Image (tube, rainbow, N blue to C red):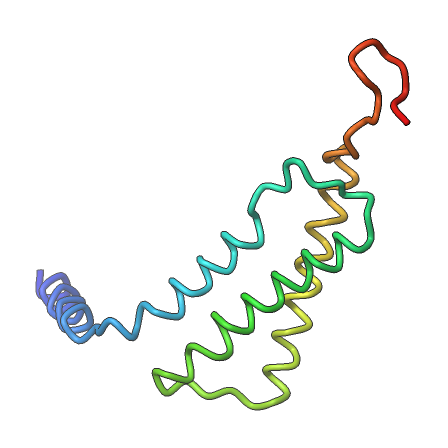
Length: 120
């Protein structure tokens, strides 16, 4: 019985000492993951320029959300950690693009008209 009372008193103390800044990194990671997994419906996954643009968007949002914004709350990373995170952002975007492409993702819109004749 005393062990349960000690556990709950410790749990209560830990929960009451939480601040909003304790939740911000998790929320920012969830926002970045949401951006990473946005549907690529209607995008030609065979196009390399589109792939680079997608990777640039994921990288820029990752840098903004997980490198730049946390400095407002006192979270500082070393330059090496920032480079590793940026590499992770690019790698995750690349892997996502490859998985979508290999799973039969969206292809280019056909240039055929309704009667099946190729448009010029």
